[in-house]
Length: 95
Length: 538
Ligand code: HEM
Image (cartoon, rainbow over all chains, first blue to last red):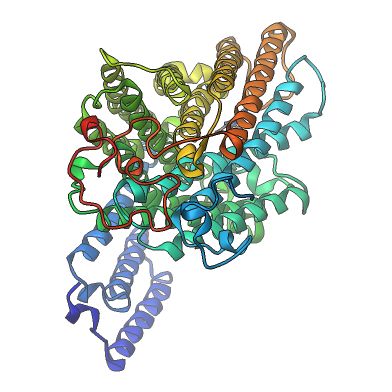
């Protein structure tokens, strides 16, 4: 880990801004449930959730400022999760 | 825990704390390994007792010693104890902690405090599980698989039991993180990846499965808990939920978990066989690689537990195909072990006998697994005693026997004393014979149609059930002799030197028992783990 990465500290302003963005997105999730979107609703909710977790991972969990191995490990976990979820669709999609 | 006669030596004496605190608050990987060893052995004995009670009930048709509800609770608790409290932590947490750091030339694991913490989590989880047996609606009766909808509805104390298993999961994850980091960061100079003992390779593969798969069971069990407490309806079709989803989530972890159980055992066998054949292991690279391959391929075959669940036919096809792929790396290992034996100078001492019976019993278990992996045959034998026989062959005949082999192979190193050879051979013979009488018979019963998880059966199954029950007595007799002989020997037996078996891995190059920090000075490794010309030197 480079010393620069280890000591990166986010300013309060930035943290608050991200927190604000998360709140807005949460409100958006609630609002969509009222809209007439049909099946799209699920995709919209998932998309918003992905953006939110992306923000949390990048800033609150510091991943944006970490060195390579940490990002790779995170990536491995995400790929694993994608495989697990993906394979259940062999069942769900063809039932 | 009393100290062995040579307690003035090595890590047994050298500690800042005294009495029990020198154990339960120790961060020495060897002491933690022993803590784990005694904990898992204790639970193993509890599990064995319950298993014997199950067999007693099945000795004759009708009610023999217990009624249906007690039987349901007994097999559930037997399963939960054996899986979560014995076999998952058995080899990795005990022998992994005891020998892995020494084998790679390290003074301890990467995170010693985390290591102690994970043992504490294990104890806390175990206490919660045990509390569940005596509180609330009584011991769970769902089977160790906690399938919904029954687990969401039963009045027995499932909620507390799943919380206990949740905590145990964290213990397992922490051990995994610790081992991966240790193996990456703390190898001694000259300990290249190509010189890692195969036991370490197997722990490495296992650790990744522990890290990546365990969170899923943890979350799944929380979902069952939430379902029971607030009724979310996640698994309830009448509220848009899906009970098959539970089975997916459960087996996404629990199938890889069987590799958490078997891989370290395969590592033990890969250590014992070359040492007792006085010959380098055949196909080092392939054995190391097949551990990783088993871990990877084994993670995507969970659906083979669900052929009869109502899952789609496409999924059955895919999972059945993938299941057959796992047989390849498993067979690679078996062939390599057998090739190692070829023209070796084989000495049939206790650890070797257990290792050889592992190869045979694991092969029987593995081949019967193919019967279950093929959907066409599985549909007939699903949920019969054939399955019960199959998984006891791989888990007990496999991992269990490897664990006994490891006890005989490594414990003398840590106690400085050893068991007597003859009683060990008698114990092994009784266990091997009893084991096969019991479980082979159970497989035959299953093929004939006797379902699992019932306290009673049709009269035509009576004779074979009696045979199986007699087998369980022979097995347990052998087990008692084994334990008495082993522990008598460790505390009062003949003293052993640094390298009683002539092994070439690093643990045999340091004094017996190992000093607190393992190595006086950091070793520089100059030869491979099965290069017996270098035995006794780093
Ligand atoms: C003396 C030793 C043992 C005996 C006599 C024994 C006996 C049994 C019997 C008779 C059953 C079937 C109950 C039924 O389906 O009606 C059973 C189930 C089971 N056993 Fe064992 N067993 C022994 C050791 C082990 C070991 C070492 C393990 C694992 C490491 C193990 C794991 C299990 C599991 C997971 C189940 C399934 C429980 C369930 O259906 O939920 N057993 N055992």
